[in-house]
Length: 200
Image (cartoon, rainbow, N blue to C red):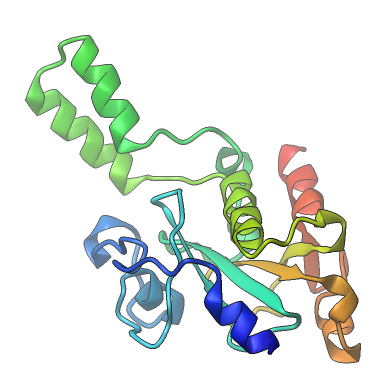
């Protein structure tokens, strides 16, 4: 029954969350999450994500009824590779186009600027959290006091591509899950803990 419930909700994106091409961000063909983000892993169902720089999909070994991974399309090794810049606002192409159009910047300058921004595209950790909360809300799960969101710390990462675990309800954790996703341990840090460290 639980699997049926989880499968009915989440709204998979019929177009695969608009995965980009491998040229549109830092891409590692040996990284399974880069391939997932590029739409090259057909067995992985991608869910619609409001942020075009992120993809969201179910964890293959769920720790609870709802266990999603929110992953940046850009290849970033782990939470240890993040810095203060990853907290700051990110401008999307549409915002930049609107701004530049209003001030009548030439098309050549616009194209060059967008290319440079696309190559160095950042994301916000907060955007990953928002995407995770949206997935839970789509499943009518709103008790955010019973949610665990966080990152594994190297060398305890199973995949060397940054991914946010969004898990609910925490009260369903078995013994092993309580250990693997133990908050603010040497191997798993919550979003709040990570953001506090990044802001210092």
